[in-house]
Length: 387
Image 1 (cartoon, rainbow, N blue to C red):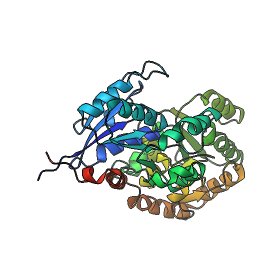
Image 2: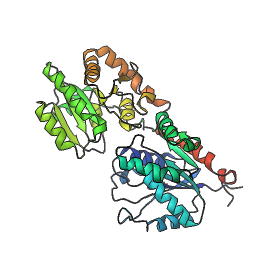
Image 3: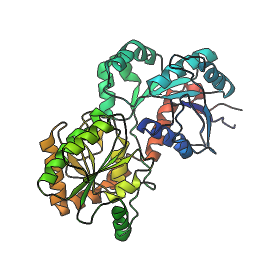
Image 4: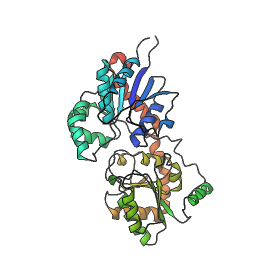
């Protein structure tokens, strides 16, 4: 008897450059086409990552959300659920879950409803209020919740105990073949020269949006101390955001004019990781940053804080250094050790790629997601349905 593939509707707010959006695109591309048909939809204007979506494998639709309180497009979600005979509605982020819930309700059908969470501590009181008054009550109606690290699952389970039994952790994954440092010494030297980096410079790379919790202020102040002590160092900042003018002003006031390289928002961070000696991420709030996995996959040691899911992949003295959040002295100590001890740095670099190979690849992420989704399907639909 032929079995019908499971039809998945993935709802992602947008395809802007962001960790949650990138993870959703990677998952849509990697999920088994032998077992699943995937239809991905967005409802906001940004489509930066659309070129990364495998359009031969994944059906894509962009719906139109006219304004923030516009719910009319959920009628189109309902139509897709009916016409596509959807078995699973997989929503990335809480706002997508809200519209997926409404679209499912309007469809008159009852596909399995899943939400993938990518946030932990909220950035504002408004976001916290929405979690308590809107999203948490709605999430009680879903079949399953995916968290991207164990610390996130613990946090949400403590915050909303009635949701804990629905949660499964599936770590973010990285493409080991794509994120590989393939440049030889000459190629690396040319790249660094093109960026204004001299041979003697130690290069720390930060890949992060300019938001307070990412810790750019602490990075700049630690770098200033090193420069004041006569150290040759460059800080490469990949990212952008509303705080850029404030951070640029701080950099100037610290006398870091030529020390800090402002690269802006870049779709492909690999050249900057190739040029760098270490990834720096002094955040005081995170969930599970892809930049750490990407750097490790490229054989780069990492200096980061033990927040969110970072300690689940970063091991002190094995593939990186963990430093206390909001602590300039601790960050400075980590940088000094990495700069001063070449043998230590090389040991971390040798361990870095292998540390993501087993549990943090896109293939592993897709496999564990498939397992969770099939477990949440009702038994009669789990193995597929007869034509």
